[in-house]
Image (cartoon, rainbow, N blue to C red; front, side, top):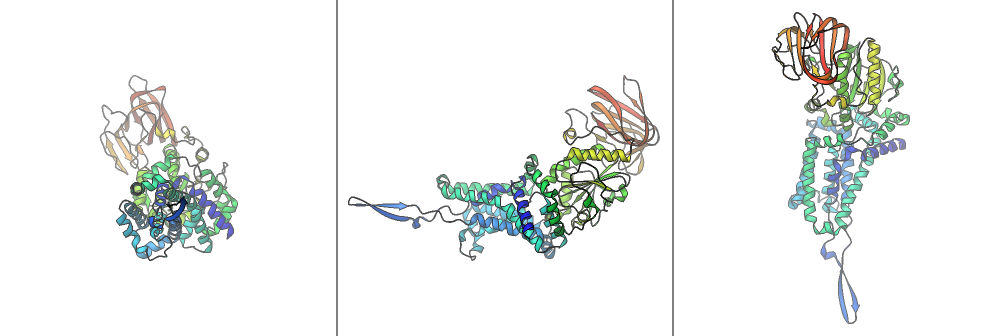
Length: 588
């Protein structure tokens, strides 16, 4: 038990100083200043001293009243976070309430407390129901309620301890071990917040400038709380958190990859030992870790044809990257751009990325919230909703985000927990793509950075030809999936667009030439690549230059159409023999 408590406390302390606590700090600080600052004037001490025959009265300021408000705020956070993390879903289900009810309840409490600071009469009304509680610092009993509300809004950065707690709550496997782990984690995460609350309390009691302008500071604090409630409601704070360096990620990874921690947490998550335990998370060398478990127990799928489930079996022959994530997890949000870059670079070359959304908290179980996150993050690869953590458990996962790399035969070859190791993961992807198809021509590596995904000013953006991700099509004809469609070329092609000519068979990932198939592309770049597959030829015609013929042979490859020393604005026309599948144009 002591080992579990220590692991929980350490995990909580790391979380408590991580970027994910930043939105809470102003709230906690101003909440700490909202208590009484001095004792009533009537409680002042009157002392006398003699100067000759004259008795001089002195008013001795009373010592500041002992303020329990910071402890009550933090106590409320610990209680609500522990209770709702473990049993929130059960409570909401039993009461028939929506998954994000607790979060909106917390935002409501935060807004009311902010209004109570601005309008004292409202503040007294909010605290009035709690005057019957024990009279220790009774005027601050509402602080505990504020803490209860904040506990529903506190979204800690992901880690193995939180994963163990969440899985136990989702699966109903709640025993004394899980309770000890949860409470110790909550205390550890709340201790740094107590420092801020206490600092606010001490300032309000001891700083004369604050005492002289207490009313103004209370109004300012109320305004800050209301603004932060709005920012949390619209996830504005996520933008700030993503822009900051993840200065605790190294510590988190050390905890996650520690064998003692893994051994202690495994019983708490109910994860039986499998062949996946043969993979050392973060290892640079590919290993053989057994067959990849199938996706199971999912509720809904996004970015798949007809919303049908993706499967490991359907991806046999391709390299698969399974990404476990949760949309409010800041660590996951930082990792998503790298996944998008890999999807963009390697999807047409045999890489399937599948996101498994395994929620940390009840509000993340909402399909509408998840759909909005997928849209906002511009995720185009399949995403499965794993609300009951069934697929998570099948993979014996312990972290957000976590990446499982699977070869073309369906064997798990590498595991990576948390942020980082992007260049290493990409090297492993490229190695497995080569193993699956030795003749594949890979483009330049993203190399662990998403800078290449940002684009160079003025350069034509990557262009997708398929129905599911069509971009920049500007011509006659409409992409209609699973049909032969007649298109017409533009005589004058607008900048950074393309048009199709002749008849094409339209698919979800590519278009396939039939009779008289052509494409016209207007671009600004020094290099142009075209991902193609099948058997046949493509003739490239650029005005003022000799025609160039590309021979296409086999599975999808990136064929270079243009190679110049400097970017130029040009229009090219391509003529395809029947049976050529075209995926994308990309530019350098």
